[in-house]
Image (cartoon, rainbow over all chains, first blue to last red; front, side):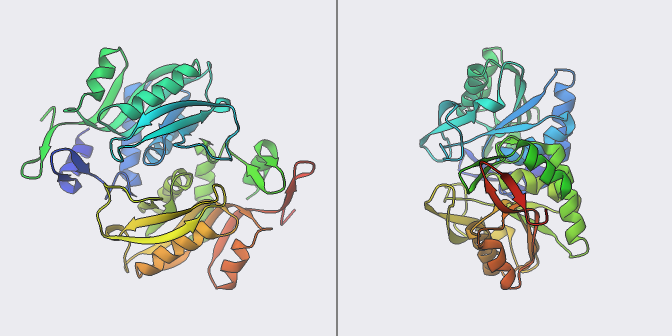
Length: 192
Length: 192
């Protein structure tokens, strides 16, 4: 998605060789006009696939998922990162190791909101090692729902998550695939 | 907002006398078509106030804030609940006690995304004791930004947060104000 890659080149900053900060428009401050274009692109990619639910994970996926859901005219469910007393006992649960924070946390979705009738598109802002995405896929499978695919905004294609999941036959569409990056050279995309 | 109150009556469930579960459409599964109507109502209420930034707090405020921001044509910033290594050192920080979880946590916003030029509308899903909202107001003041007001989806008007903040001269607009609730009688709104 050219608009997104231009924005990453303009406003993204690289720290070391593996941290890409896009917090001015994607995951701390959020440019919802850009999100609308991202949502339309996911709709174009997954048109006709029967998506009737979007699944994401708190927190930074939620805004993108909600704006994308406007194009699909379907609800969003976001997976929660720890047990809250406001969640009923009946949940699907899995464990995810965070790339950003290092720690392992529980991820849950209420059984009320995911089931065999759902055709699920998973939306997230980043894909790197694939841990969060694998956790969400596990929740979809536990629910007996159909996984249509994943829509990712930024994939670090030099990390193994995306290719490992594609090798399993899972459809993963990433709008910007980063081939390499460094503080000196900035970001290079796979299709540059 | 009549559409919202009807939805709460239909799909909300009361636990004890103080927990209102609206997780089927507001804060776990999210009905983005309803969010669009909520966003339009906040726009109607705060039309002409010069809002150029929406501030919310992770996680359940983010979806509502993003869809509302489409009506205001402005970015969203969401306050984060703990220090992440992906946040630069330069942050505004405050402490908030969670009604849902009981514990006290740090809430931060990068100084890059909130400043004296901002006219801020705070958006959140719930207002009860007002702790989260007071934390967000503190961040706005630390930034030297102008607080236009708060847009709340559901206010538990039998808890003190909303009235205490209004008594301080802060504009708080809540789309559904719950006067009382119980498992037996369901939800009674202030203007029923």
